[in-house]
Image 1 (cartoon, rainbow, N blue to C red):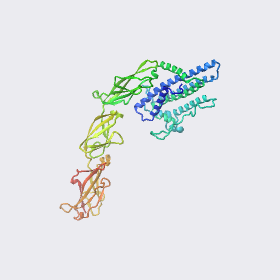
Image 2 (cartoon, one colour):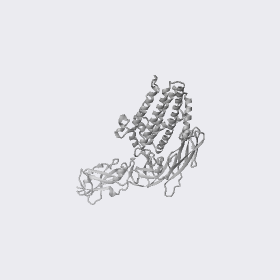
Image 3 (tube, rainbow, N blue to C red):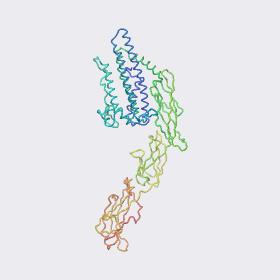
Length: 581
């Protein structure tokens, strides 16, 4: 029983329930999934204590009624049987919830046959179907689904209404319970899915299976609180003073807890690592705490590393340097640690709790691949993936590049855009992890020019050649055609233009003479091409004479719109001839 102020135990239970609910909104990591199991265990132990408390409260009140009956006072006689029936109904609800947990674990694929534990802590589909139903059935009944979640809610509602009815019967001020039925939660705010209102069933059971099982334990606490509320009300009817009754019940609870050897109100030493995988050269850190509130500070000790107590004396942080002495040919090794905590039991004796743990040390190795191309192209936007798998979620890269610009991508912390200028590019890879900047290593790239494009001229839609005969008024088009693979990989770096085209005529065996030209600067020559006229002067020679088109200054425009002149073309490649009719 708990009247007036909330007991430290109940405060702890309420806090664990709140933490459980908040954790369901997170993008859960492996550490959080493990924490769900810890919370389930602690809530289960608290439920056991709540059961002892309820039995003690029932016993005290029935003894009070028996005393009244011996004195000939029968005004509370019916309450004695009501207390037994209430506790029986409560036990039935607890058995129903425990039964759901057993049914869930017996679903094929949920339990590991060897360990008898949940096979995959992040399993979310099998348990969702169990609580909500499969397919369209999950959206039935106004979003409540057709699974065991709906059955649980209906059972809790029937139990709550029964408690209210049994107390309020024949009482004009039926004020103990109002609105006892479960309500759907309000639409969430500030999280993914803003403004979306979920049913109670979906809100509580949409998530990993370990969270579902912990939530079932939390709901058992709700049941005991409802019973506790009614027992308090009956105690007031009987004229019992809550504080005196609590002392008697606490003695009964302590005795039972001692019988099952739960020290310090159910304390257990827990280790919650920041990460279970640590790169060599960094430090392994784990938070140490005792699951339930201690009356006195806990003394932690470890020969494996440095223990730093946290405020309040019930927790600590263990820090262990991760060794870099790997066995030959190995890039990963396991390191063990041990820690003890001295706590006082209910009888005042000191009990040493021990935790033995392990973590993995990995040798950091850089894995660098290109998101688009296998070489770094000069003055181009090369998108590179730079990863260090050993760091896992701790990876927070900081990269530099010699003779190049390097820019982190907004899409992923592992991607970097590199624009090299020289013949080689050295990419330096570091990571800021746990507040420490650690140099991982360097990766050296060769820098090459993009593949050379081809220069093509078309007359009246046909590819020009020395054998082609052209007449006045012919339509001429110039194209700079990028290498197909290069254009596919880096389209914004494969844009070309030319400064101009000079036109020459050659009469007989004499040298070519300039007949005119066209300025094409600033216009894209790599798309549809550029049209330009053949000067009339080019046709002043006899039929069968040569006309030459000489392309000047092939220029590539990169993704930054920076212009880079391509000097690799020979005079022969830049001249294309046709014959006059």
